[in-house]
Structure formats: C-alpha cells, structure tokens
Length: 434
Ligand SMILES: [Zn+2]
Image (tube, rainbow, N blue to C red; front, side, top):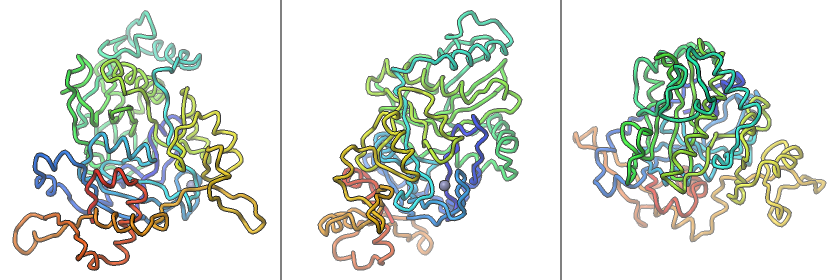
C-alpha cells in the first residue's frame, strides 16, 4: 500500500490540488475486513478493533510538491467507537474512510497541525456576513434575515440543509463525480472508491439518550453523517461529517460545480460551526469544530485559520494552543515545531553548530521503556486466518508471552510504533491486531 491520504477536506475553497484522488483512498485496502465484524459478540462489538498497517512509504506531497514526501503511520479501523476516535484525533490522527493515519513528524516535508475552532465563541466576521448576503442574492426566493441561512430545519429562499445517513445514493455519487472531474481533474472516479472513502465509516453509531428533534436523521446519535445542501430541490453539495463526543469533525466536502458561485466551501464551514452550537444544547461537552490539518507550508490550506477563536494541537505535549501564539513560532520553524514555552527544557534536535533545528515528535519504539515494550506486545492480538482451508471464519487470537517469539522483528517494530502513537491509555482500551 503506497497511497497516502492528503488532507483535501475543504480544499475546494482554494482549489488546492491533491496528489491523492478520492478514489485512490480506497484502493489500498485490498483486505475486506467486514467478515471480522460479524464475529464480534455484543460486548466485543462495543470495543474498537484496529488493524496495524504500519509506516507507509513516501509518495509525492500534494502540498509542497516534494517527490519523496512525508511518511504516515496507518491503521485500518475495523470498528471504532466515537470516544476512541475523539482520543485519536486529539493525538493528531485523521481518518479517510476506514483508514487512520498520522504523519511521522520527525521526518516530514510539511507540518500538519490539527486545527479546531471554538464554535460556541465564534462570531461571524464581516467577511462571513458579506458571504451570507451574497448567497442570499443568488437564491430563488426572498430571505428576510441572513441568519436564517444558518438554522437547521428551516428552508430559506429555496435552500434546505439536511443531516442524513452517510449512505451511498446515485444522486450523491453524480455530484461527487462532477466535482472530482471539474475541481481535482480526477478522471478515475468509481462508485466503489466513493463508497469506501466517503460513505463507509468504521465509527460505531452511538445513540443519544434523547433524540434531537428535526436535526439528526434517521436517528439521533454520534457517528458519521452526510450534511446535504439542496437548492430548489436539487442536491448542490454534501459535507461528510463525524459527530463525536466533543466536536463535529469535517471529513470532506464536495459540490456540484454548477453551484460554485455560492462558494459552498465557506458556507458549509459556517453551517458546521452552527451545527456544533445546536448540538451543544443537547450535548454540553460538544463545543468544537475540527477542520482537519492546518498546513503552513501550503498557503492554500491556511484559510482554516479564518474561523476564530482557533487552536492548534501541540503534538509534543498534546495541548491545544491558541493559534495566534503559534504563528510566530511556526514562521521561525519551517517544519514541525512545538508551542510549549518550556521547549528548551525538552530534548531537542541541534545541528553541528548547536543551533536548534525543528522540534518534532517521532513515532519511535525507542521512546518505550523495556517494561512498556513488554506490555505493548502483550496487548497486540493476531488475526489467524483459518478460513481458507477449513471454511471457517477468521479468528482473533491473543498473543501470550510464550508466543511472542513467533512475531517477527518487523511486526514487533510495527506493534511498538503503533503503541507509541496511540498512547498507553488507548492501547489498553482498543484491540490492536496484526
Ligand atoms: Zn510536503
């Protein structure tokens, strides 16, 4: 598997091109893991199951153009609880379909900072309001108050926005195909790729105790959704979203190029911020809007800093830092850096003259103590394929201490890399399988 996902969500705003087409996201997953799903008992099925894919080879970077771009550590999520995914994205991970990936920042061409907006404190800027007025002018019917354009369940001026199940329909696919061809020059669009990348989700639906009326269809809960934008009854755009315990996370947006005059990229970001505000009334912990990666080396991707107040995730400390405090430091460090004011006390990389180089966290098993290495390996399970010969389903077997010698050095390295990058707590909570 060599295809590495680029963060293309909302790239429509700026026509940033991506080296990875949507259809290639799914093409790397030759294994059909769906048969494992049926194995889960009711208690097991509430637990996340992640399959270790390992460090991916470098490919051309869609942001800076480097031929041997960054490396990513990848996992295949066979099933993933919303809580566990929240923990993962708060450690810098993202998902494309069921593929989870994290940049190895110790050796990367571009820095990827996870960015979030404090949606509850967000006030539409003058340019946001100007944008809403422009949309209003283009709608077929009159809208008295532009703020109506941001309210769920209201059809304003022929515009209707509905949160729907993240399922495949021919109507959505037709819009996706038009978008990929016109905006990303992607001639290799398939139904299967669309399904895998934007419809299939490993997230386990988590119903809410009380349904949120008129908001979430077909049932209220945390999980993956399509937010569909209809203009005069015609599907104009689809925002792929994950609703998680403390955020709405934007996965992707595609739109019908016939509606590009509405700048649906900006509008969808405003709608998604409004969605957080609405969900917060029912889910007090849900306060943030996650926009994926902020990539300073790619000017076309820095628009995500427009929605304030915003934070960037410091991968060294796993703390969120207000973006204004980060920007000066980013300007001085072309690759990844930490925003921790105490960074000089941390171990840092220096060149031969003692100058501080970039400060990047590595996904390295060397960070583990011998005791942690032992614990990490005990928590890895092995998928045993007994299906081919005996017509039986695949099984998952635990690796006991005595069997550890059966694991090759490469698999051990992979298991330890994953353990380091998901952290001790998550490694305990989820099933990591080889
Ligand atoms: Zn790059």
